[in-house]
Amino acid sequence: MTSSKQIHIGLSVAPTWLMNDAWRRADSDIENVFSTGFFVDIAKRAEKAKIDFLFRPDTLFMKPDMIAGSPGFSSIDPTILLTALAEHTSHIGLVTTASTTFYPPYIVARQIQSLNIVSQGRVGWNIVTSLDGNENFGISEMPSSEDRYRQAAEFTDVVHKLWASYPSDAIIADRESGTYGTPDALTQIDHHGEFYDVAGPLNTPAFGNGKVPLFQAGASPAGRDFAASVAHAIFAATPDPEVARELRSDLRQRAASKGRDPDDIRILPGLNMYLAPTREEARDIFAQTHARMDPRRMIAKIKELIALDLTDHPMDARVTADMLPAADTVVRSKTHGDLVRRLIERAQPTVKDLLTRPEVMGSSHWIVVGTPADAVDEIVAWAEINAGDGIIALPNGSHQSVDLFLDQVVPRLQELGLFRTEYSGSTLSDHLGVK
Ligand SMILES: Cc1cc2nc3c(=O)[nH]c(=O)nc-3n(C[C@H](O)[C@H](O)[C@H](O)COP(=O)(O)O)c2cc1C
Image (cartoon, rainbow, N blue to C red):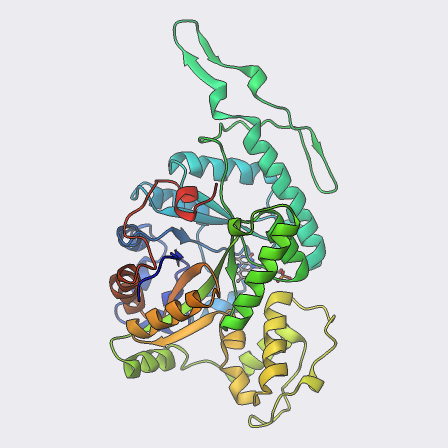
């Protein structure tokens, strides 16, 4: 098969391939995970494979218990890491994460435009409204998802105004006349809204036209509306192709109803890949990675996801729709909660089955446990039915998954005509086709 439609591919440098027990493997290089060197080789290889962008999610809290058995959410600042990687690469996009609930918009506008300058137009901003961490920012309780997205909308508007407030052509630098810039070209934005009062202008000039592709992830109605208004790409948590198709067609419709071109919003499902030369080895790696998964922790996670307590239920009892709490029960993430509810309504799994599902065990992403050819087949099948416009690759289980993805999966997708063999430009907007 060869295809006329090409997909977009981002590679997560979270790094997912160290999660759970995978960091314990002899070749994990876990000792260097807080060094830039750990990521440089992967970034260069991803660029050689013509990947659209490196993607770095982020959180702003730490639960000490998390580090007992794995790195948990230990992390360095994503924008600083990607700035270091910008120096070692020349084309690949660099998508950083910044929370609209916790950061001030002036700082985010400045940091992202700075990385845009350092990388010469390769930055993308993954806009998150965050799930946790309010106690680190003097916020007594996490605001509701609706309130967070209202704040995110105003935040993003302020950032856009700031990016436009110091255009690159304001700088003339004419030595002869002694004119450095045109003050009139800079605008005081004088923003006064529900959440922010920002005078502006920014003191960082825009790179080029200053526009930066925006990413978003939450898929609640408020999250979708926000994404449809501003996002160019969605990091989608879609464990099966039907969920992805529904999300894609809904977001395209919402974007059109806001006067946007539906093609300007790209759905990129996360794809967890446990890869090995044979299926048996891949299954072994999957089992080893989750060997210490404690069912009690998973039952606590279900309670957090959908407010359903399965503590006293036998492992082989079915979980049915009538056991579900009311649909408007407040939960941490509506996106993740709704995916678990949908699974229970559709499949009525046993407690034991439910505990091993991606919706519960992982981050609700699509999973392939198999060979590179299996991953290619899945990616092709999803592309054929428009279950997304590409993927964000989340290699898991061992470093081997990163290697097999870059060295075998991507080249095969290129042979099939489903992925580019050369970059046609040097900015992230070029790679994504953002106009
Ligand atoms: C796939 C996915 C990835 C996310 N990644 C992050 C992240 O890296 N950092 C973060 O603070 N929040 C992250 N979030 C949380 C969202 O930004 C949002 O706050 C949350 O999902 C609530 O919105 P919702 O009700 O629309 O789901 C993520 C959410 C989803 C669904």
